[in-house]
Image (tube, rainbow, N blue to C red; front, side, top):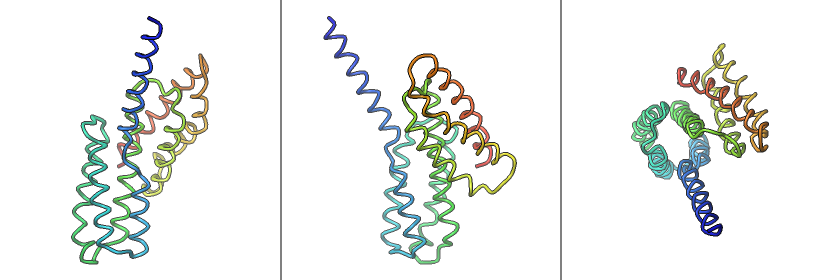
Length: 195
């Protein structure tokens, strides 16, 4: 009986890990590679192919997500797609397309964090959390300044500082998860109103 219970728990853990990986299956670094190639004036045909693959990967990750960021991501992906003819012809505005890619990257990180909050406890997820918060912090630069951007930046700094506590067991870990969730939720709500 005990062995059967262990098997069930193991299968449940594997399923949860699989769902977590599926939810974050798209590699954001591919967008960095595309941006780098565009800035260097790389082969446009190759860049177009990479963008097409990235767009498919993003749509696959978003799937049936009901996060408030999902439609924003799909809108920006459509916007990026509309730039492909200009990219093919060599008449693309580099700043325009790199900003669109940066916006998509920021929104994907925000969507992942929103989904993490929707799953409940953040315990044991400090690495995943910090990685996506880092992407958000990088993306804040494209929003310019202002009190809201400053507030979001401040909240995200606190989240990053406290995230190692999510690896603690017991009461301390639970308290950290609750505090981080609140600050992260506030920052995401504000960010959603700006992008």
